[in-house]
Image (cartoon, rainbow, N blue to C red; front, side, top):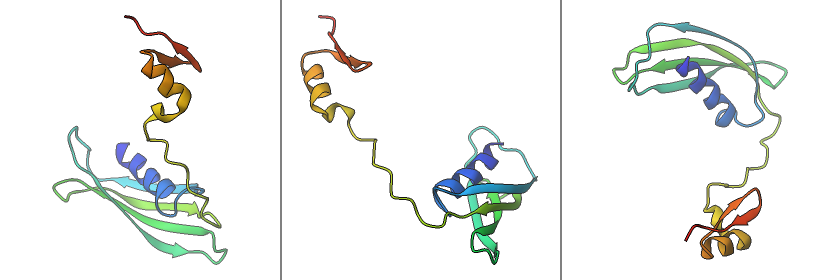
Length: 119
């Protein structure tokens, strides 16, 4: 099932991207995914319906030995427009003044409050 999760992640995050609605998928499993495998997920537009939103993707997952693991189709409703980008939340959370001051005093934040550190 890991391979199918990678397909839906690719569709929902990259192509078409955020706002995509999954309508259906039909997948065929040709082999197992083993612990330590490296998977390559490929999708390509197979059809675009006249409504301008429904897109059928051809999906394929291969392992590090170029063995086909999964093939099939995914049908999605593509977003009408790209949503605005999400802010990057991966930065150092200690940059906000309250959190930085708490850390400088040897504490840590818990539910919005500074908890003194053990000295």
